[in-house]
Image 1 (cartoon, one colour):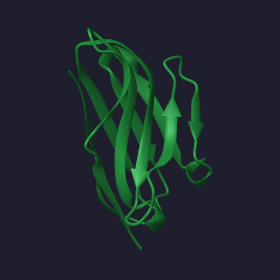
Image 2 (cartoon, rainbow, N blue to C red):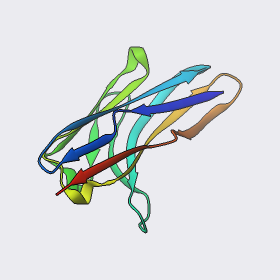
Image 3 (cartoon, helix red, strand yellow):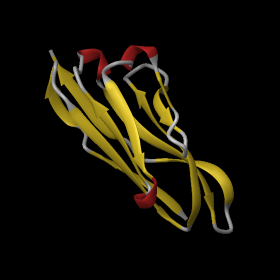
Length: 120
């Protein structure tokens, strides 16, 4: 079993900041890429940012320059620092990880999500 759990969501005013965290636990042999996705009401889930095990990153155009993804490989953690938040960033944010686990092979896992609400 592998589990991802997000934390750090909440309500913030436009222009404010939040930091999301996601920890992976279970019979993990190796975590490859990790990422953050978001889904706003009535919209499809979209990639926000991703990071490889080596630290290479990519971002959605809408968040470049405002959001920063990072990870702590020793602790199986991934972070998303969100600055200069806008009302259009309001969504449920999901953590995703590509994990090689004992007896389970390699597959992707999702966290349950954390709500981020940005008020204008």
